[in-house]
Image 1 (cartoon, rainbow, N blue to C red):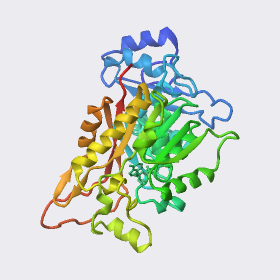
Image 2 (image 1 turned 180 degrees about the horizontal axis):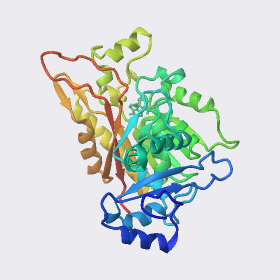
Image 3 (image 1 turned 135 degrees about the vertical axis):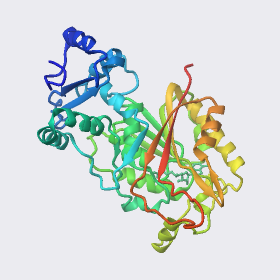
Image 4 (image 1 turned 90 degrees about the vertical axis):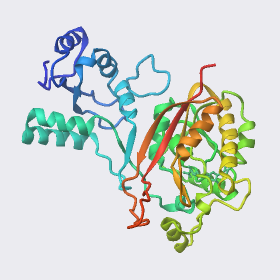
Length: 387
Ligand SMILES: C[S@@+](CC[C@H](N)C(=O)[O-])C[C@H]1O[C@@H](n2cnc3c(N)ncnc32)[C@H](O)[C@@H]1O
């Protein structure tokens, strides 16, 4: 196979020798990767894809990315997940883009057809450049509409995004923990991925909702993995768990008391119009009711310290939050929380921005002052140090 000739998938020492010769060439190397037919029950993954690689920096990178690319083929050194090395790389892109709630992510068949059309109409080189941008990462995240029972809860996250995190940070059969499980999204995502899960939730109404959603979950294997909801204060519930008993913690805590603000927020007013609740509860133990921001952070810190104890060494904690305004002050919640969590041991390893391009723009303070429309969330990734 040669540079840009779209040949068969590279194999063995001959290919690497060719890569070394090509090193330093302008524009890098374009190759076509062909996946083998998916294993039984694995869907139609018999695809090909043009990859553009910066060869000069890349002999070492290539060896990692091109090894273990076929579906279901995990690098024997991989102790974290069941992904191929290529899937691993794709997941490390520092932003994910929501698809506007349509639930449609471009599948491999569509991409294949599209790339054929691009090559015919734009030529090999331009098609390679365009496809490189399009397929260089799985940046899309598919948000299922917040319908059905889930809409009763005032602040939920997308199961699809959590499935991506769970697939990256665990292997099948491992245990996922969410100390603020709300409507149970994490448990649904964990079961869909074949992982066990435990969720803690203070408010009985939301704990019941999570249990109902788990009980009604469809499209599961004959023996779905266990998913348990415990109605308890997160701190109390975590203290009952053994050291190093969870493989991954993923959660979204309350964003201080933003849901208790006067109904200035349009989204809140719309929920009120539909007769839906706009906050979690009146319970003083609900962290969404803590008046002082410093005290709120300290109490969250205690909970994340316990999460760190319960997590196995070297494993990960993902926290999904957004910044917000408090009156005229802009609060960098993601930064404040990162500092607080790191004080308790887990080390910040990266931040993924979750773009929410489908949200409505509101003309806040137009034409007098700059007031941001906050259309992204942060996924903060921490790792517990080795024992
Ligand atoms: C942002 S929501 C989580 C939503 C969840 N990710 C979902 O998709 O449904 C935060 C949840 O934390 C709960 N909560 C607040 N204080 C708590 C505490 N001290 N212990 C346990 N849960 C608490 C709230 O009732 C709320 O359901």
